[in-house]
Image 1 (spheres, rainbow, N blue to C red):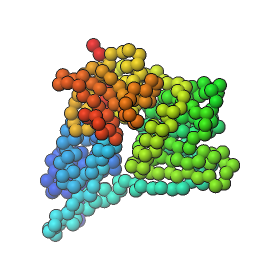
Image 2: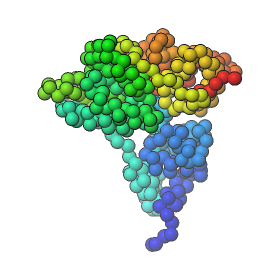
Image 3: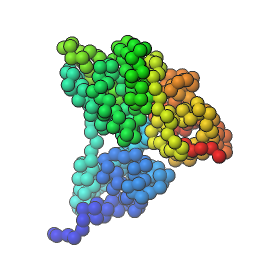
Image 4: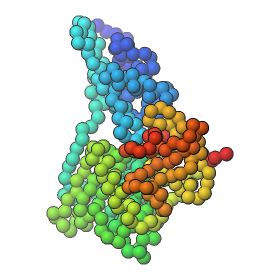
Length: 348
């Protein structure tokens, strides 16, 4: 029978049969449009405060309608198809279809692992990773590759992507020529495994000879998986980056500035702290708590001098009205809180 209802009206009508409130419906529909989104994006799309998003996401998760990925930074929320009642009414099967159809169109990509055996393919993957990186790009490449990706890295930085570049096979006299290519640049006189990691989602690691095109047996492996890509991040940040020589560090962003990628926030916090500036931090945490106070310490090895006590420690310490709080990002396990967003301001 003809109907004058729009597809969204049908969808909202269906979701009301599951007992969802208007705010919960707005949030779920915003997620269906995105497929997966950060709490900040959901807040904007659904016109719901960031704090409310955490509460709504928890209620939707209890109903089996979303999956909250709090291992990512920032936290992401992924929609799931509505569960049908165990004893559906004759109309339930019809009512469940709009949400199921919408969910099927936004089903996230599955994890992938692929072997790369050619220089053109490896460079194509690297170019694509640079172009698609939204929050962060970590890259370790041989020196002869830098001219081929320099413009792409500059464009990524212009778009706001945080970039750490490690160049291998560079002697001390040549190192200064790579200064300013990324937010921070380091060089090593030895050849390192070629690798990149973008947004904790995609990564590649392999033989640097693959990029020379001279060794037919050289290979690399690409990964589209958060857990495995996180391991590549860890290898870069705990093994190669601290051992290389710092060539350049970009000037810190002017204050105030807000960050949803915690390593970037820590990078700029460390630069301000090293310059002797008093910084006030406002932090929205993964559990919905808001912390505010003077930043008293930064633990990191992103820029010299390193101030962390153990490998991969990346945190800031804030003196709040209720005491000192340590704050980390993705993968943090000793800090008091895990940040979703950090705003750095000049302390008054």
